[in-house]
Amino acid sequence: MPLHLYIVRRILFAIPLIIGITLVAFIIANAVPSDPVAANLPEKSLGDPEIVAAFRREWGLDKSLPEQYLTYLGNMLQGNLGRSIKSKRPVLDDIRQYLPATIELATTSIIAGLILGVGMGIVSAVWRGKLVDYVTRVVALVGVSFPVFVLALLALSIFHAQLGWAAGPGRLDVRLSKPAYVTGMYLIDSIIAGRSDILANAISHLVLPSLVLGVYSSGLISRITRSSMIEVLGAEYVRTARAKGLSERVVIMKHAFSNALIPVVTVIGLSFGNLLSGAVLTETIFSWPGIGRYAFQASTSQDFPAIMGISMLIAFIYVGVNFIVDILYFFLDPRIRLA
Image (cartoon, rainbow, N blue to C red; front, side, top):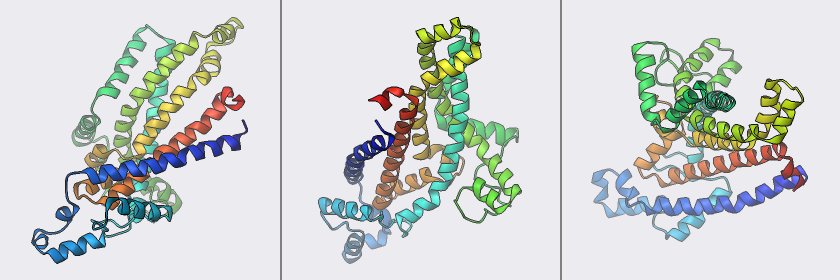
């Protein structure tokens, strides 16, 4: 199958999926047993029927649920996600403000998780049954099962508060001003601005939250890598490669690991999508102004436009990540190209 037909096919599959997600998100958001009027109007205004009615008209809450959904869907197709009840700004502007911080954190976290997880998985599979295998499996188990907020609190308490080895919460020290806005990601913006002091400080603030989320992601990546590698290492073509006299490094990396990549790429994609959708607790603990904190604020104030906007953002993230993973499948697995 040609690549362009494969891409078109995946896009056509994604369209009804996204529409279905909007419907499910809308139903769930409106099924919450609470009133956005009571959550956003001051108590003295709740007793005035005219103010309550004006609030409902302003935010479209006086319409029936089908009308609200169709209105939202029509606006979304025009790139309009509505206006936040809490911030009084377009939801899209709020997302543009908070999303770059999450992208920066998620990217560094998945790189850390990829290095740790894939490395531990390969080592564990190659030396299966040895001491190093048991050690890496225990580390992976801890990474998967240990609550990420506990790990974050421990890391912040030990490495910042007690030892002083790492920077504290936030994206920069208070003495530094943020770089001129270009992408919203401090690492890139500081490089563009030529500010090495801001770059170094931003990296120091990224270390702890990235490692916390990286360790959490590496546990699952390591387990999948190990099981996939063990399966491939027992294949006939691997035994044939060894019989030819190829070095063990070439056998493992070229013949075994390259053929074990598909399940590994899948779990990496899902982990990256999960990180991009916002690690609420980690962002809260490290005072990281990302999309996770914005989602928490929207949910506590019953800000339905913001909740729907975040739901759509998360849906697009997962659909986009899965689309990229599907494209990688096309290059990794010859069977897909021949299908």
